[in-house]
Length: 113
Image (cartoon, rainbow, N blue to C red; front, side):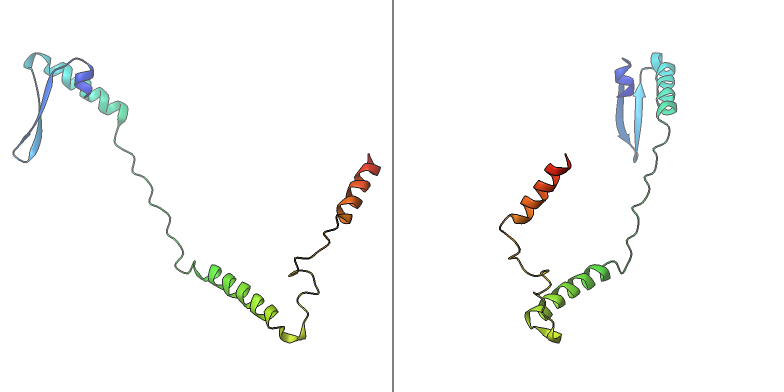
């Protein structure tokens, strides 16, 4: 394609287990010059770096996290250790839905302005 872009007619053929590039004898030196220039501009291809190796035991942390979350949910559901898991409010979805908390924040912001 380099030679074709420069207007040099060429032909690539498979011959005895190798590829052969053929050009007319009158443009042989120009073809060599163009191919040498192409090779000097592009050089050898850069080898990509291999992907980093993953830690063999990378699955342990997520597995422990899942076990801990399921254990906490199980313990809370069974009312274990005589601890009121819902009294802390961490597991309660009721909360204060009256909006009074938001009104007090808004009124504090209005007073600070």
